[in-house]
Image 1 (cartoon, rainbow, N blue to C red):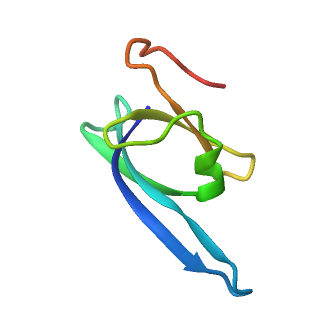
Image 2: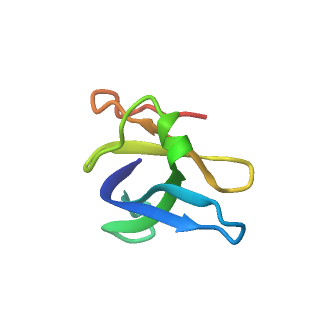
Length: 90
């Protein structure tokens, strides 16, 4: 599971003049057992359209599961219930 540690508002223009808005999320994950100790960091972008489709509003310190599409891009986030630490989404 990933913990959100930073959220950055993003807005940029594409080559064809369209404006893309969304947020870049910075997250931490525990280092896998046997590979070291501590946490590793990652970041990813979600467009405003993908954010609007979420069932919750991402916020700092939330535990989330990051869901990827078949191309390896972040497709969605699932809020992890802190009372159910065994939750896994396939």
